[in-house]
Image 1 (tube, rainbow, N blue to C red):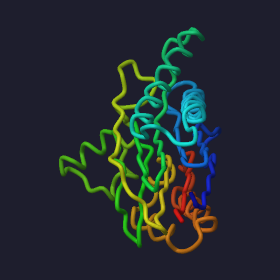
Image 2: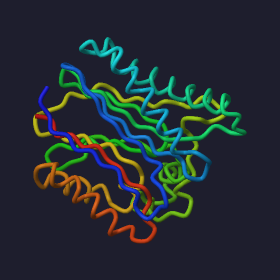
Image 3: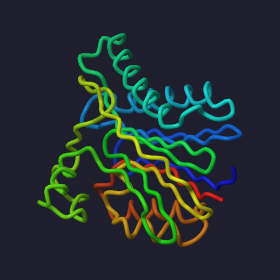
Image 4: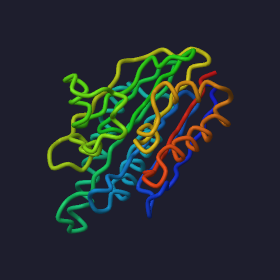
Length: 244
C-alpha cells in the first residue's frame, strides 16, 4: 500500500473537544475512523474514546496482515463498540450511556469499505468530483429526502443536531455499510465530524482537497471551516488519505 495521510482534531469554539480520531495499518490493510461524542449528553468524549479504542484494538488483532472480510469487520467492530459503551455506563452506574457518532473505513487490496452511524461523514473524491458520500442519520437528512429543504441548508438548520442513530443508544444502532469500492491512484478519502462539513459545501470540500498535497490542503480546509463557523464553531476533526 502507498498512501499519504493527514489527521487533526480541533476544539473550535467549544470548551472541550469531544471528538476522537485514529488510524492504524498493517502491511496490507488500513483503518481510519472518526467518532464525535454527542455534546447534548454527558460524557460524549468517553463514548467516542471507547469507540475508537475498541475498533482499533479489534483491527490490530485481526489484520494479520489483512482482514478476512472488511465489511463484516466494520459491522462487527462498530456494533461491539456500542456494547462496550453500554457496558461501561452500567459498570460506572450512569443513568444513561454516553453517546457518539462513528464513521470508519478499511482499505485493503485497493478496495475501500466503510460504515457509519450518525452524522460523521466519509467523502470519496476523484478528479474533482464526489463519487460517494455517507448519508446522515438525522432529522435534517429526512427533510432533504422528503424534498422539504435543500442540502445546502443543512449546516444552518436549527434541528441539525437531532441525530437518531448512534452508539450508546438504548436501542441497537443500525450500522449502515457501503459496498466495496475500488480506488484509483489520486483518489482521496476524507472522514470528518460535522464540525468540518457543516460550514462548508461539498463543492468547497472537494475543490480544496484536490488543490494540492493533502498535507497542505487538509489543514487549510480545517482553517476554512473554523473561519466560516466563527464563534459557533463546533469541534472539528478529519482524517484524509491520498491513495497512491
